[in-house]
Image (cartoon, rainbow, N blue to C red; front, side, top):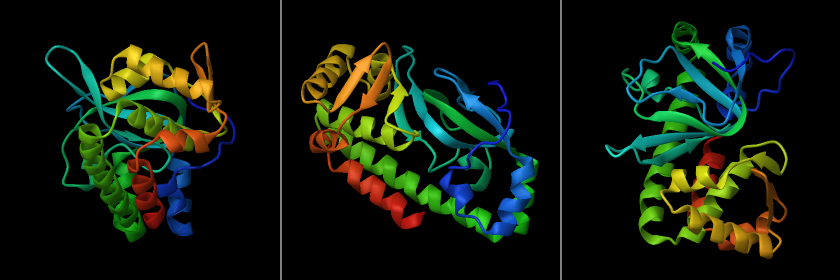
Length: 236
């Protein structure tokens, strides 16, 4: 498991920030905050949950793995959400493998502490269910997006989502990670990123991507980006 962060850290997770002060005061001493490293698996598919995980920065991909070992992203989670939906939806294990694609940091909260918080503070369950609604919207939009929109539109949307979930405009991200997340050939991802670089939208070197002009990227992205973003803004 990733190293525990030492010292102060900024709580950026929207679910935690939306809670009432008394709920935050209860949760704060129980949160264990650790770094997220690229490729780190938080939970494997069907694994038993021991903690809910609240990202503050970075991107965690919920992945489906096929029999031939190919993987594709079902949905992605950043500071707007949490891992452990089954904990408030009737129980059960992880529904997907959750893998870190963009590094950052997150807080772990044990099931016991989460159950106590839900029992004592109605705002905790309410916030989690609001996020569940947003995640369903993201999943439904992704079905339409994967069927109707071009590879370049989908790549641009993914880059905008990643940029929204980090502090600043630069973050660690490989083209291989993008191709695996979206189920695209690496050459396709390389071509789309090269065009964005030529237009001055991004800079890319040695696995580090810098967003120079998000407006240009948004011009290339499909409308799904705006729809999903508005859904989260209405709820948090």
